[in-house]
Length: 167
Image 1: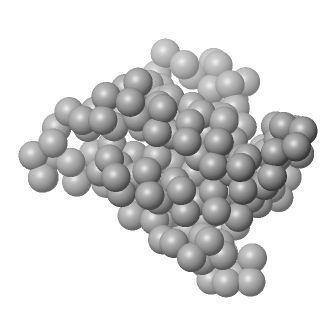
Image 2 (image 1 turned 180 degrees about the vertical axis):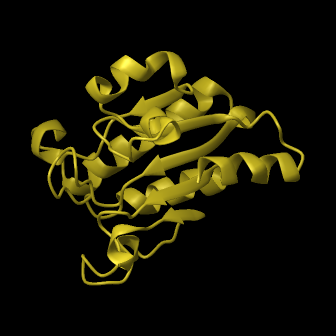
């Protein structure tokens, strides 16, 4: 997925788009590319010299991070807007993709996003020309009641990874 995102921007004449944003406390696999965007620092530590640079923002984990008096919608908007802040910090013209699991599995249990979170993420990605890469390896293929977990939010990604449920 990361190579596809890079190739896309090369093909459309935007070679400066090379940065990837992902979420802390995420797991995308153990290849060097997947470890680069994975948000578990202890998994990454020994391989750090080999990894591409990725920026990590807060995960959607309202059980610990939602503020007193904050509604689910307010929380989701606040956390999603961290993506926009990261895009500005890296430079809009430099960001290739945002990688996220619609339902976090391996690192946090089965943690679904608050309603509206991914709709805001989709808006941000569209506004700044950033590809939305959805990792549905653990949560896709019918595990949430729809074929793709992101369907619960009523959006789609630009690139999607699937695997385990295909067998």
